[in-house]
Image 1 (cartoon, rainbow, N blue to C red):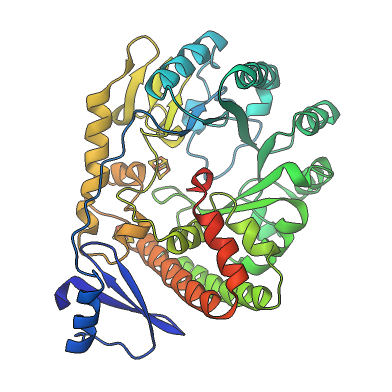
Image 2: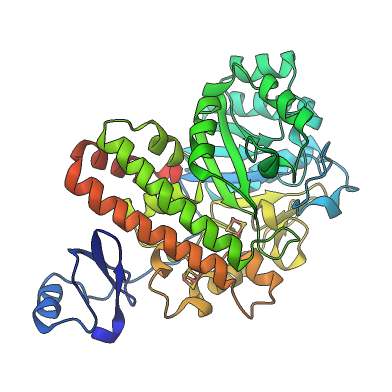
Length: 430
Ligand code: SF4
Ligand code: SF4
């Protein structure tokens, strides 16, 4: 049984992870491999080695769904790491196509309770503010009679004017603002100093409605300052790594520096929480932040058979009427899972899900039931031969920090532990 386990050594605790079934056991420091006989007996008596059956997620009857409609492929910026530049020439989505797409999504999930339509995809959604308003109106009318449906989008914010601001506030929309940081080194892959100041001015007064979407690229960055600064201008924080396989992808050196930054961030969060301040942690676990999401997964104790809701709760409509696995898969033929005329190609979705679930690169990784495996799009770009070892190292580092966090908060602040665990079980954030 020993060879099925790995001890993850954290600063304050050791966590025994069963690689076969994903179960974890938190212990005080001092557990070493091979596990001693009495530890094995104890674990055995507590079902640590029992079989766990992972079910394949179904594309039908999801309660929460997040379709993406890439309303435009055009953009008013030219970010260095943008993966969608090559689609700029394509036309915008037709409203009629949008309706057909939503009908398909509804047909698959007739009992959904919440549908959040993401209008982002491959361009700047505010270039088609007319379509944003029209789709919002449709979603409001639908919600009045049926289940809750609402829109959201991530914008670079530079087109926000008085009208748009009024519309966001009046309709209580929650939007993402792409914003990579406050210093030139942080934002210069997207915007210049003037645009940076302009953006901060434009989003004034929208704090409650904003989540910051920050892309972490290589170079100097102070993540604690980012979190504190973003908190002052937004209600939620999402920091994600720049995609591998792009001109801006992270080097091993960058990853090592980012690991140190996250270790410091954890110390900062623990200090705050033990002093009764939950403001930053709550903003980090409220959206798609890489660390926040990892914390939610560790606190909830759920096991993940795949990384994301691609093809299941997520699907994406492009302007040519095709449907893709998720917004990042737009226009990549391998990830085309249907179109508005023929609907969803179920066999194709199952094929993609099979690749996700088999996680052939992750078989012996202790982190696989929390990490969920690599992003299929990144893997496809590597022709499925390998994963990015550096990105995996960072993933595992974040999981071990989340273990440490859970152990310390559980033992020192039950109120915070319950708050974080409660949020971690909320299906809207999974
Ligand atoms: S993607 Fe990497 S870190 Fe994640 S489970 Fe697979 S091998 Fe582990
Ligand atoms: S396939 Fe990759 S980009 Fe698409 S939803 Fe999953 S993790 Fe995100």
